[in-house]
View 1 (cartoon, rainbow, N blue to C red):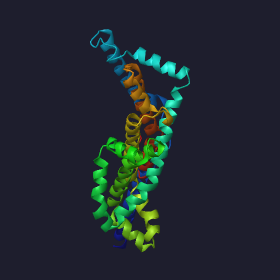
View 2: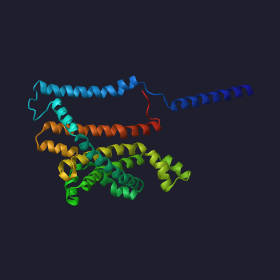
View 3: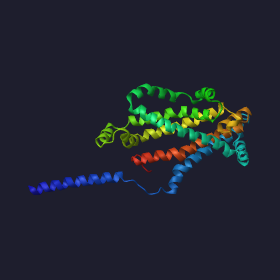
View 4: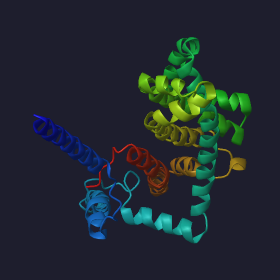
Length: 298
C-alpha cells in the first residue's frame, strides 16, 4: 500500500516537474541573431519592391501619356532633379532639419505635459469625468483648426508652431496613457498595495510599467499628430523669418505652380515620418512587446 502511494506521489511529482519544464521552455527568450538572408527577404525586400512598383506605375503614367501634363504630374526624373539640385546647393538638409527640430522639440514638450495629464485623468475619477470627454474631442479636432487662433494669439513665430504641436499631440498622448491604465488588471494594483506600493510609488512601479503598451501606442499617435500639426502650421503660416521647413517648401511649390517641388516636399515629409517611426517608435514598441513575451521571432 505504501509502495503504491509512493509511486503515485512520484508520478504526480514527475508530472509537475515536466509541466514546469515545459513552461520554462515557453518562457525562454531566443537570443540568437536572425540570419541576414531572412532579414533581407522578410524586412528589406518587401518595402523596396513596393517602392519600385510605385515608381514604375508613376513612370508609366507619364511615359504612356496617361497624364500628359507635367504641371499636374511630373516624372520621377524631374522630381529627382529637383532633389539633387537642392542637395547640391546645400538646402535639402536645411529644409529637413528646420522641420524635424521643431517637431521633436514640440513632441518633447507634449510628452512632458501629456504624461502627467494622462495619469491624473486615469487615476482621479472626478478629473476623468470632467476632462476625459474634452480630451477625446480635442483628439478628433483637425490640427489645422488651431493654426489661425495660434497666429492671432502668438504671432508668426516658433512659439506659434510649438503651440499648434502641443494642441495636436497632448490629447493623443494623454488618451493613450488613460487607455493603458484602464487595462491594468486590478490584481496588479491590489498586489502592489499589499507590498506597500501606494501613491506615487505605486504609480511608478506598478501602474506605468503595466500601462506601457497603451502608452507607447499613444506616443506613436502623438508623434503622428505632432508631425501633421507642424506641417499644417508651416503651410498656412509661412513667413521668411521662420526659415524654410518642409511645409513652407510645399507651399512655395504651390505658389510657383512647380509640381516637381510639390512632389519633392511630399516625398521628404513622408520619408521623415517613416524614418522617425523606424528609428524611435518601432524599436520602442518591439522592446515593450518582447519584455512581455508577446513578440515571437519568425
